[in-house]
Length: 391
Image (cartoon, rainbow, N blue to C red):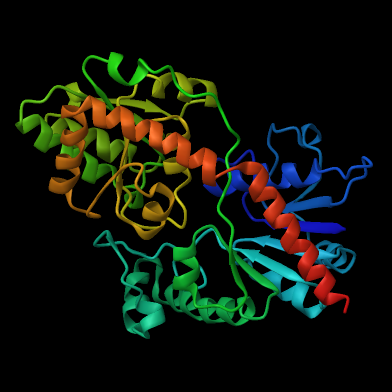
């Protein structure tokens, strides 16, 4: 089977989509039959330049920034087309050439013009204006880009829905997202993680003061400002803690200034973007992981990664987070700093509960979020759509 995998973003770009696409594409390319044959020949197209990354280090063919004519040729000579995200041209060309197209939804582009299901400003989760037919609200939401750009995004959402309704399978990383999309041929496939050894059991209790860790891009949707508001509440309760911020982004300078204005600087350490090995070393000191996202999350890869580390978690009660976390962590009302502070205090005050949740979280990942299962589930879907197209 010749699989053409299209992902607009790919390594060396950093993000959840890039992480999952790399893991999945590599796993598919490394599959072997009992006789040692390669069942899936993977070619990956991306718009991300290689920079200093060595494509030859991966067991698949990578074509970067292809022209449209090259995209068409590759689609015509492939058996199955996998599109990571609702990218219009690969889906359109795949359907025109009557190829089985599989779309994996890594965002809300099929139900929200800005793809985030988030209103900024005022920085709040969107209740689903597009699907409810409140199109004036969608146009106002994106007016900061200019009215022409806002109208374009709005119209393209209709086109994405039209095309996604005609593909062979729409894959979603959570059942929750599938229910929101209201598209035919939806199959949920949970993301899978490569299993790593757990942290030493003493790590969560050895830090003095206790460390509350955040990892992610410093953008509005990730809720770092909300975490700072919760930290102010904890400080007002005379609690000792360190807030570790791992990551970088356009809001870093604003957040650093805010930490100074709110007199939180002694409690907050900005670590910036760290290499993978340094991230693990930094999180080995963490007592609690906080994931205060306000929206834009279809799965919550950072939630799953912290669960695998055995970290006790406090996360927003977004639908995707709730599905991934289950009963293996605490959730708080999205955008409510008082509730976030209360849940953080609960774990700070009850180390036994924190330890139990960390163990439960890791077990949940081992039981439900296995990388091998993710790869085989995708291979099964490809075999099914190819068989159906050959009938």
